[in-house]
Length: 108
Image (tube, rainbow, N blue to C red):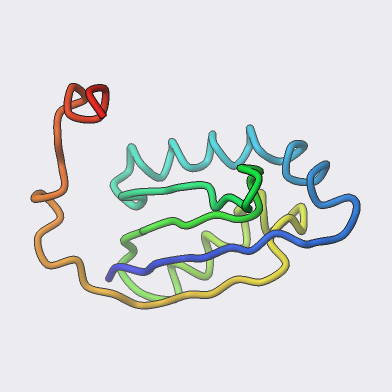
C-alpha cells in the first residue's frame, strides 16, 4: 500500500538546527528504506528562499501499521523536526513508468 507523507518542519527559531542535526540519520534511514523497496521517492520541501522546510516521501508498506512503525523511528519525527505530518494513502498506477536513466535528469 502506498502513502504520500508530507512532513512540515516547525517554524520556531531552533527548527533549522533540529533539521540539520537529524538530517544524516534521516538520509541514512531513507537509503535503507529505498534499498528495501519501501521508499520510492523523496524530496525536500522548500520555502520561497530555497531553504528546506519539510519533506515529501512516497512510500510503500504492507499496511498502515507498518507505516506507523517506521514513523516511530524516523529521525525527523524523533528529533521533532516535523511538527505536522500529513499522510495520504495513494495508488501509483504504474510506478515503472516514472523510472528514467540518470542521463534524463542530468540534461535538464
